[in-house]
Image (tube, rainbow, N blue to C red):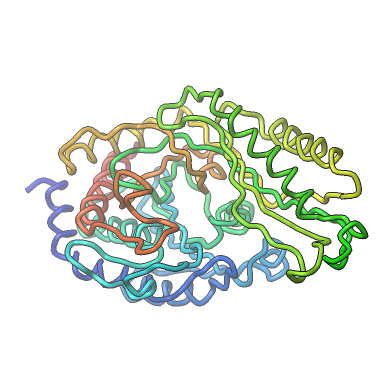
Length: 410
């Protein structure tokens, strides 16, 4: 039995334990917002320590957490030192959007039905706490000389941009990797992704009794003017095409809107939050300036209203660094073998923490346990699920890649 087969056999023999580990992670909520995620980190650290993975807990100062719009964050770092050589970081995030409505399974139950496990973050991305931890354990089970190190990084602010997660760890030199893999799906190696600009737009008018509407200025009607102008941009965006395979065109979504005080009152204030996805070829500063101008022009067409615009998030696109080739090649080779089909390297319309590492000059890719598409995983929808065989096979792939990179001192 060669080393690859030994890794596969160890993962198969410990797979029930791996699934139980994931179930325990799903059972501790990490809804973001509100972002009270330190309790999950405490539980995850307890479980990792029980497996012999000594875990550093790094609470982020409250002022920074609150400034990011969250409540509590404790980032986890597991350093595994094997010898002189490259340090490879494996980064997964535990924060998730709230479950919402329509579930037929307990979103925090980790229930298994057929060959799937259900729960919020089952697929994005508590599953890769499991993938990465058990890949490292499998690698160490070989008992062979290794040349390099692995840092397991478990963070809790990907939904809000990563600034008090991976960025904070890098700024404080709590991890200094040479290469990195971030949580992803199993049937593609992602080397590029969209950027994301999120803004909150607040429209101010003047409240008035609905019986005398002319005495007020309707903020909602003003907001409708602005929204129509923004949605018109989506038609234009479809004419712009990215050259990155897997990424199509820019687009804009308004995901939240609130305002007014009562049914019989002319609304004096309306606010909404927009999400603008940027293809890798776009300049974020130009995108933001254009949106602000569209809003200003629409505001000018509705006398009496004023508008405040607040940037919530600016996540740059991921552009591949030349140094990612060893990761890409190894992941494609082993994923193709384990899954029995060609695995492409391409881009994704999502945005992730990987951009933070690449902006720091650390080549990274996205790969982990999950289906072919986000839609199949039900991520951010009811009944999020993960095929357990994807978890098993992705763990084998990551373990094999670590062996390639560390046993040969590449």
